[in-house]
Length: 107
Image 1 (cartoon, rainbow, N blue to C red):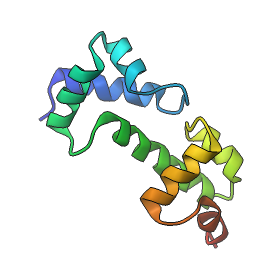
Image 2: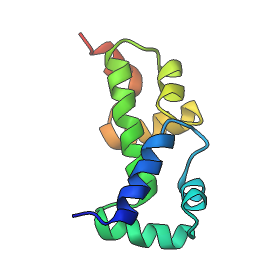
Image 3: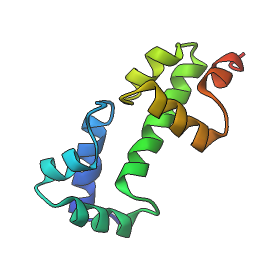
């Protein structure tokens, strides 16, 4: 069972996840704790850190958008990535494919 702090952390993440400026530092600031403390608390509940957790959520959104036929440029901004380059790198690392390949194979 998640404690109240962890529930609050996840709520704040979901409220801000698609803002490309939102990251671990902003999350910690909103919660009023240090980034180090946030990572420690987060890692106790999840098998990954908060940055990777947020990236996974953004990538899941991106896949849905690409499968719906959205362009890569629209997708990376709508999914909360700050740059096309960062999006493509994260996508390739996670799915071993380029975003455009997923879009082409949607049929």
